[in-house]
Length: 149
Image (cartoon, rainbow, N blue to C red; front, side, top):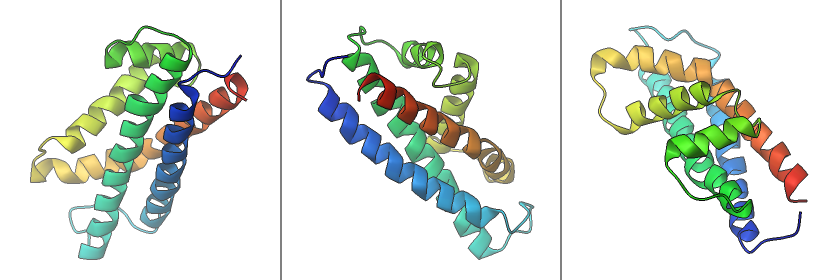
């Protein structure tokens, strides 16, 4: 594929995603040493807050920037986030559009208010699905490297 004018932007967003993925992986590693219960310590809470923030950041970069930049580089018509996620699924970057939508909804839960009662379950869910988001990041890197060498 020939280089398009949108590729510098794709490269920029890919670099942002790479850094965000490294930080998410770092936060995820720090959570392995403890159980997420109602009695988490203040330091464990801080680690989980970092994990939550970093999950949301990588999700935003991938879904809003990288996937849209891929669409632009491949001359796709811009569309809704659902269109973007569907195309990412068709490209094999995400397992399926349902998975991508669930991750997006989780990101939205983080971004919008959640109650204190939901917090422990939210932390558990984020720790559980963060590896999946990291796989999506790796898939996106491979796709970009294969299409835009």
